[in-house]
Length: 262
Image (cartoon, rainbow, N blue to C red; front, side, top):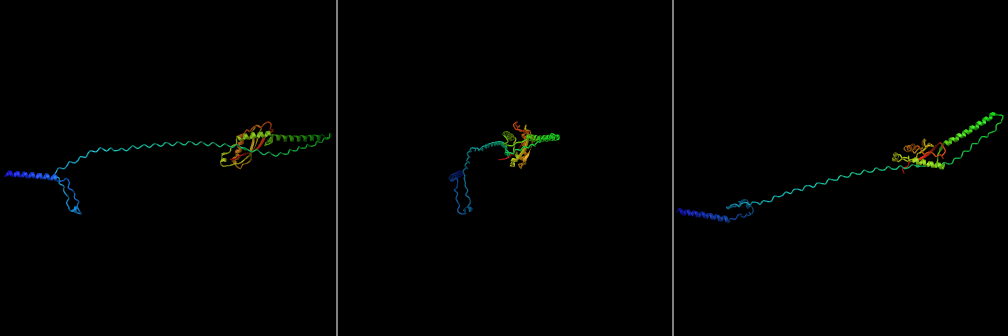
């Protein structure tokens, strides 16, 4: 009796084990999920998945190759700007050439009438009886001759030069004008102010060109131009020597000097 019980228990146990194995094998791994209708999901209990078999080992993920980090490219250095070339210095403007003086020749003077010869006093022969009369007459003649000689000498000592007197005078005046033109200078201040004019100067000089006297004969209405004309005469001393063909000890000359911007 005891042995048969034992056999029955073993058989029952074996059948239970076999049944459990069959159930495990027949049971699917995943239970299909049924979608509830309406609000059935609120009242129905969730399904429980029973798996008696051992859990499958989690899959080991394959090692992924390390991702190389892209290094950003180095920034290209900006080219340094080339230094700007220094501007070349502007050439200094050349000074304007001073205009040569325009020497205006004096108009030829009208020929002066020749002085009439002074009539000589008639000399009456004195009576031989009176000696005092003879002495008085001779004294008068000597005084008259002396006065005429002094007048002629004074005229020959100082000569006023004018164009057209003679070819010698014209040649000398041309040389004198060229000489003065070397010292002609237009005042810069008068040029900036636009001043124009023609002052007239009169000057006296000796035979060797020494300036004896000079003065302003007529103003140009601008002090700068008047002073420039007088300064020109002083700077031009000594003047050209007077040739021997011209008579006189000193000479005077009146000269207009043009200051014209055009």
